[in-house]
Image 1: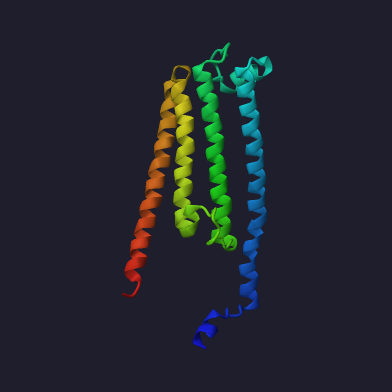
Image 2 (image 1 turned 60 degrees about the horizontal axis):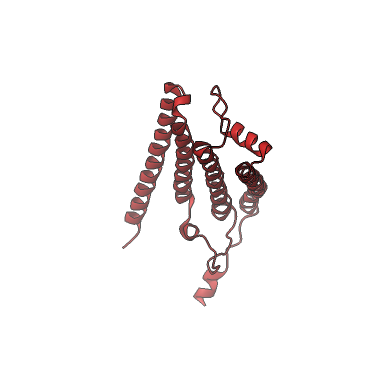
Length: 202
């Protein structure tokens, strides 16, 4: 009898219910991010098809690839070489990592701030979603941003001779700021977790 009473949700005050329902205003935002994901998928396949076309001698695809990897102020490459291919592949990896970031924001944000998705028994449930909360989501987003920044920094290092020293230093400093910020978020989350565990009655 007591278990049945506990399982019945308490009726909210009309004002509280209205405020709580306002979380659904975030739904169009997550749907918009899904559309942005579609744009990234289209961009990925355009870049990949141009790379394949350039490898097989398509002049238009080759020109597009060389223009995409060219450094502003540096002479445009005349042919597809190992560096050009590497830069295109890094660009594709960059798109994939941003896409992963979008998925984490869409699924994790919806699960955390809007409504439960009830994926506990689903075979394809992401491993990280089983213990996601606002703090975990922030940490994972910070790590994803570091990964994206690492790709951009690597692309700069590959073309280091075409960049000024202050540009390379600035990008390196920004990347280090991302790393320090992620460490600070993770450390803060650890402190909060320890504090909550100590506050629980034993």
